[in-house]
Picture 1 (cartoon, rainbow, N blue to C red):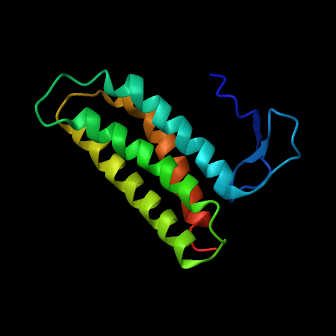
Picture 2 (picture 1 turned 135 degrees about the horizontal axis):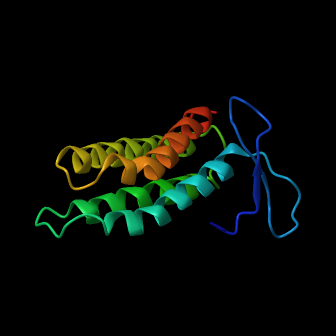
Length: 140
């Protein structure tokens, strides 16, 4: 899938990615920007994923989409804040909390039989990657 972010290259085992902008900007290794890219990918992936859910009265699919969008939104809102400031850390904590919320919702969807394990693999992989990257940047 071409997401417009350019190519991600593996340059660090701890962070796992490096971003080269598709608009010929200089290479960037800022983890916050990388984590936003993966969070945006996750939010986009949630749209077809939640269409697999049956129509139900509890709104699980809508909650999942909101949680996924919240992750990318909070990273974006915290990004321009001074790195290491309390505001920056708070937005990263909220984003991390939203990953836990989405992870729980995916588990519930699988346990109720709404989603098969194989259908959830891509979402779970992106979610795990975002959680790991947020763990690297949230308190710096």
